[in-house]
Length: 300
Image (tube, rainbow, N blue to C red; front, side, top):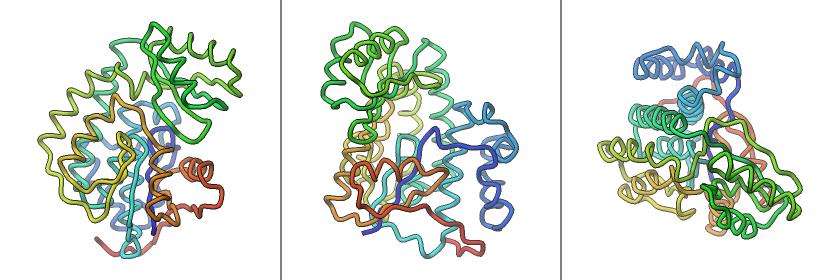
């Protein structure tokens, strides 16, 4: 079974999407539609902006969403997913790709999510850190023993977990985890504590927008971050999307479950190859690859 996976924040690069705009009519039309929906020319930032420009949450999230969804549409009739999943923001891309959300609704939700998260980040200084080389349970125990907001945020692959919380909480956790033998402890350059209780204000805003948006029964199941389990139920999909903002991304568990359910290959749809590397860390023998742009795509 073919699984298609969609990256989240951090996969952006200057020039992303320019080839799709220049070489396909479909891509050009969708990018221009996105410019109208957003009220500014995000294509100018994507194609010509600096890395710092692209790091702004309000730019990064819609930019990655656009790259992934337009690439999926550009594959044309060959795009026949049997399973999909997305890492954090990538969950919205996956839901457009499997037909649960329209392109326009997906972009509007991603834009609202990004703006709400940006505002939440400004309310209280916070950050995230990557922890390599320790058992997940040990990291969980350390986080729960600190009298600050600090929680597991991303279960990326066996031995690689990201924690999220207040600056003091992250600093204390990093120090303790180093003492316990972590191979590497890296504070991340991010706007705030994503997938933590500090995102509750953003969650409240997003909940209202999601509940007003129509979700269809998708063409194939999505393995969502909140549960790591497959679903095709629109109401369940909505609830999981809302919960995702303050809950950890269970990527390792999602990949394990997809393989157990018959996934024989994983194709990453979007910028970069980060998710392919994470899949390989779960199963070294798994077939992985990147989606390829077709210059004369068929419309969906």
